[in-house]
View (cartoon, rainbow, N blue to C red):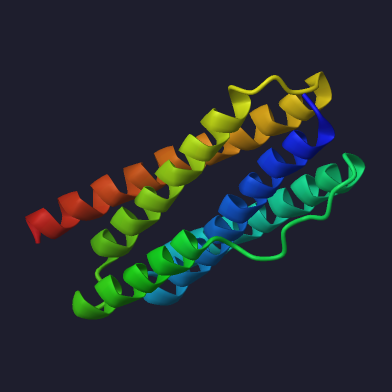
Length: 153
């Protein structure tokens, strides 16, 4: 695989990671639960760290790291804000949208990992993919718990 293709794949992952960081920050802003707010802020920082790692790899392969997220990510964050506003910052709604964003991140990493990548780059992406899976699973668990609490209230 040539460097231009590698840079393109990495920049796509930078976009989804930037979207994830911004999405987690939006979720933190839209929840009234202090524990969730701290969790979302922590995950946003983790996504920012991932962007830094990916950006270094883009430079290593001779490219320029993408500086912005995707239009789809911006639309998703606007939807999270609107849905939270319409549901009075309902934590279930915020978590549902957060999970949707994390599912998109998983798909992006799965697609990237289907490519023929150099071994050390594959190891970095595998590590980030595992982090995205943990985020997705934890958000799903938090969502299910919030749904259960809302249903028994």
